[in-house]
Length: 223
Image 1 (spheres, rainbow, N blue to C red):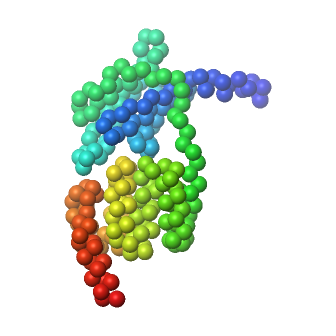
Image 2: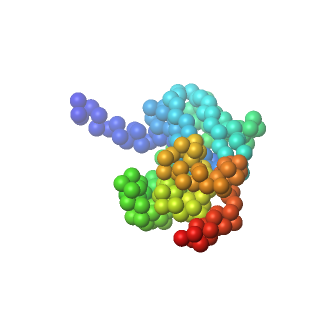
C-alpha cells in the first residue's frame, strides 16, 4: 500500500491553484487544492471554505473605511478546465473571468514571537508579553491578532492610550471578530473609559486622544 501512494505528492503540487486580488485596501486571496477544497482569505484571515468541482459562490463582508461592504467571489470552470473567478462588490462586478493560475499561497515565516507573546499574556506576564508581541510586529505588521493581544496587555496594565491605539490598529488591519472588543475580559478597563463610547460609535476607527490624556493627567495629579 505504501508503494501505491508514492507518486501522489507530485500530483497534488501540480493541481493547486492560487490567485490574489486587490480591492482598494482589501486583499483577497483564493486557494484551492486537488480535492476541490476552496479557501478565501481576507487580509490574512479565512472568511470562507467550501468544496466544489465545477464552481461555487463565496459570500463575505469586509469593513472598509467604517462601512460594511458585501462581496461575492464566484468560482467556475470553462470548457478548457481553466478555473476562473468573478468578484462582485456590493452587487457590482469588479473582476470577471479572472484566471486562477497553478501555484500555492506563499508561506509566511513562522512567527514564534507572536505565539510566545500570547502565551505570556495568558500567564499574565504582561511586560514580557508586550515585548514579544512588539517583536512579532517586526515579522508581520499586518496581523490584526497581534494588535488585539497588545491591546489586552495594555488594558490590564491600564495603559489607556496604548490600549486604544492597539485596538484601532487591530480593526484597521481587518480584525475578523470585532465582537471580541466588546466581550473579552482583559479589555474591561478600556470599555469602562469615557472615550470608549466614541470609539465604538466610530466603528473603532478613532478615539478622543485629548480626553484620554486629560484623564491620565488627572490620575497622575491625584497620585
